[in-house]
Image 1 (tube, helix red, strand yellow):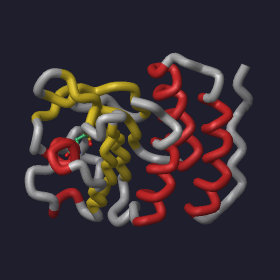
Image 2 (cartoon, rainbow, N blue to C red):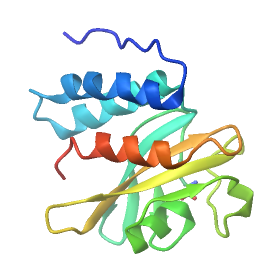
Image 3 (cartoon, protein in one colour):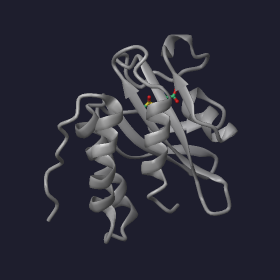
Length: 158
Ligand code: SME
């Protein structure tokens, strides 16, 4: 039985440092990937107070929506399209301070103002999906998010 998350920190870095071991504890001992991805979304949404957080996975020639927390979202994204499709194509994290300034940004929600998307790699170093985090405020994400979200994704094996 999972316990509730405990986040007392105020600064973003401190919050991630509190959250990381709790997410680790949440997923270790559970072999079901969907269950772990779903719990990671919930832990990030409520631990970090994100507007939207979720996974997209490569299925055939598209990214398809996976576990997420937040408002309903677009289900399919083509390679090279939007922030997620660009991260799939290039294999590099993208921080978008203002979604209106990102050419081709896909607006799943008009409330979304900034976002960060990280690639997810399998053991053969192929991109198998992305983690997408959206904010309803401008300039919400930076290198701190990129670093800690990567550490959380490194807990998973794809
Ligand atoms: N904004 C993303 C699409 C996914 S939603 O934000 C959940 C993009 O441009 O790829």
